[in-house]
Length: 113
Length: 109
Image (cartoon, rainbow over all chains, first blue to last red; front, side, top):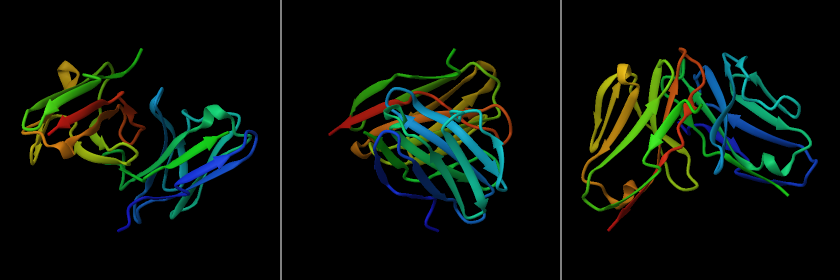
């Protein structure tokens, strides 16, 4: 069991470019979560899926952020027209059924210049 | 206002000392979890503890729902315990976790 896999580990983009972050949850886990971590804001919830269906995206900035889960083996977080304030570590987590125990990936550190 | 507050924000110990980390919350609780994070590292789940007391090695977690608090006790601290400890709660089954700001622990040899 390789755990939750996130790629890339680091991504540097120029302002206005698009960034796509990938997450492979633990096999058999039905819930997938995306969080963002910064020094100032700490850990912030973005969105989550259960059985591939979007359940709660209340934490997602509405205009430039989107997340998909096309199949049970991966989810993507896409940020269009990236801005410097999007710089953060983006964390993906999965759980077997509910939020009882979350297993986090190592994160993708996004730097927008 | 902030739903989950942790204290202290930072703590420095000498190796061998004990630590008590606090997590206070202002909303109803369905689940409470404690996580550990090394600098630049991922989060590792320590406890899923919505109520009562749980033990794991030198760690003990106690959640008292009616007092809206949870604590993490570390006994006989070691330098490898250094890092950030985060509590997180959800108020609906399967819903998002709301994290506290964390306690940054430094254990000196």
